[in-house]
Image (tube, rainbow, N blue to C red; front, side, top):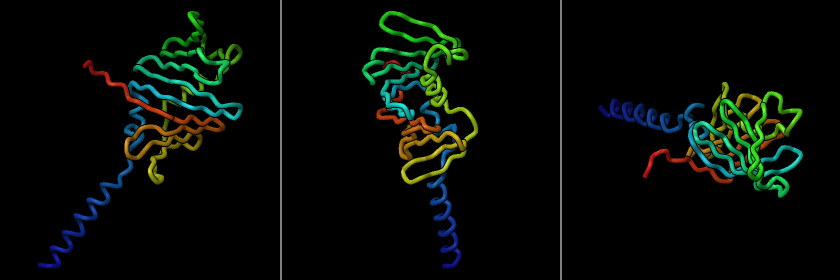
Length: 170
């Protein structure tokens, strides 16, 4: 009887310990980036460091620069159908496909990185989950599943503050 009890206890303990260490899939991890949010980001692209506020409301992604001072007050917006830049009260639409000759493509690349689309593998690294496709690496806090940083080539997007927006009215 003792052997049966010990064996049963060992099997249950193994099942509990294995279920606690399960790594979430990429859909679960990237959920925060797919729903409405507001985040303060710092972006290093090899040439400079930029700070901006990025927000996503389910349809529109917008970037508003904070630093460097020369870009402060400039915003970019992206929907499925259109892309535009805002400075003061002036809105300038642009075609993302042909933007390379007209504006910096940095923000369009950042927007693409924030979408987290594609096939990724997920692993745990200490207190973070790492989602990677071999070229781009997403790091999420293991306790909250909120994004910590995104690295792709010489671009690093660091989230200094990330808030999920609540769709429910008070």
